[in-house]
Length: 446
Image 1 (cartoon, one colour):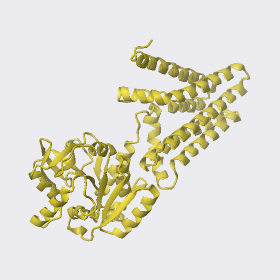
Image 2 (image 1 turned 90 degrees about the vertical axis):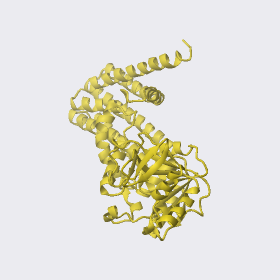
Image 3 (image 1 turned 180 degrees about the vertical axis):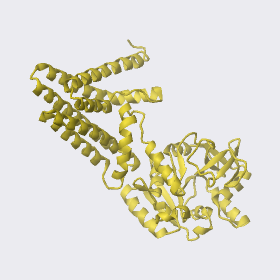
Image 4 (image 1 turned 120 degrees about the vertical axis):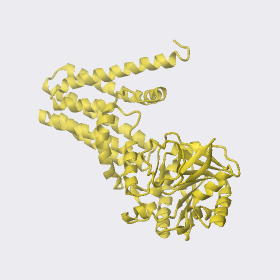
């Protein structure tokens, strides 16, 4: 399916930033990049972008972006961009002769909306509008500027910014048939206006505008500096994952989400952030090998810092749409090496204080339990998150590193190793029993 994006307007309310609106930066990417990459993540590969105000600057930027991301972008020029966004849509008439997605260049949204909407049934003479029924709870909306919609029996009855009776918001996401071009031409002929919502209103009176309920999915119209700040906060808040452990969720994310925006201002890749975190953990473990409490405490602090930075790589990857299977695997490999060095250093520290066999044995159990904890995490987390469909107490690396941090500061290296050995191996046994009971018994086995 092809996608048409209109990005021709001036954007006066945000123009003080000093660049055309599509090129306004938000956490390392421009608005137009975010719209295209979100749609691309939903499976769309062919894009048609309508530009107008400072169009040459926007088109040059998109040409570089297209090559960098290997995404096909066709330019459509609208020199009459002041006449309304409907005219920008109409400029694509000669390019699109089949069902297509229509997006606004300044509306950010969850890619799941498009994934579901693409497969929705649509007649040849119809248009579908994604709507948000959360008119009392969506605090991301500028009520003075948002386009309001009156829906009845799943179809648009009325639409506009100033209508008095409404029960939904227009998200700016459409599934269109080429009939949309005829409606825009008809509206321009009747009213001499090129406003898209007016054309949708005209089709709505004919019963040809279906609706798609986005439920509680994310979307926001970034129209000024206020909504730009809201979008930034919302994107950062969405970085939390269902598989985050309690330390990651309530402590580490508070710091990592403050650090990540600085990484986003650079060309540092997520894999480089992973490597940086690993190097810090190596330095931390080297301090454990040095002996005294002073070095032990420094090592513990550095270990916790590495754990915080370890969350930044995934945040950078998600915010810059740079997630990859290799990146996830590479991060996991470095984490395992980091764990091994930290626990080996802690074991050596305890052994040097009391050259006895017991610290070596406890350290061995801690390392084995840690490795098996990491090995079993992927399938266990996937199963638990799907089954429970909510957060659950996850015993993982974030808790382990935090225990090392606390144990180092309190000068209790042996009991730290012992606690990790018991906790990790106990968690592994629990996972085996839980999955055996839920999976084996479900299949009728014993």
